[in-house]
Each structure stands twice: as C-alpha cells, then as structure tokens.
Image (cartoon, rainbow, N blue to C red; front, top):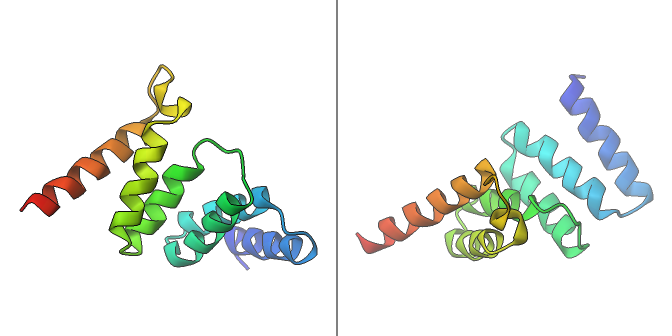
Length: 112
C-alpha cells in the first residue's frame, strides 16, 4: 500500500471509532491531494458540519464543490471564505487569491 493510501486507510479506521471533524478534514486533504475530489467533498462537508475550526476548510470545500460541478454552491462557499478573517489578514494567503480568481472566472463564464 502506498503511503497516501495507508494514511487514508488509517484515517478511515479512526473515523470508524470516533466521528471527528478534524479527522474528516485531514482525510479530505489526503483524498484531494490524490485528485479524488468526490470523496474529498464528502469528507470536507462532514468536517464543515462538525464545525472543524481550520480557516482554510471553506477553500477546500469550495474547490471540491467546483470540481464536482456544483458551481453555485462553490461560489457561495468561496464568497464566505473571502469574507472571513483568514482572507482579511496580511499577508494575503494564496488560497484567498485563488478563491477570488475562481469566483471572478465563474462570473465571467456566466456573463458570456
């Protein structure tokens, strides 16, 4: 088993014992890193529902929604993320810049 697959399996074992939003978030990150966005979306949604305090979670949730074709939902999440204290802080994090680009790009596509 590869290291990422082993990590995913271990996170799933932990979640079988205890439903924990932070573990859902970590599992979502591992899945996203492998391009398994649909599975990552489920984990990021569970982390969000469980009130995972990671300030970057909305960004990853938004990307997962966008890749899954749920563009309106992704934009809603990106807007919320862009209005968060995380994106108001200096220096501006690259995730905030990317979220803004994604929202702007989506708006341009809708205008066409």
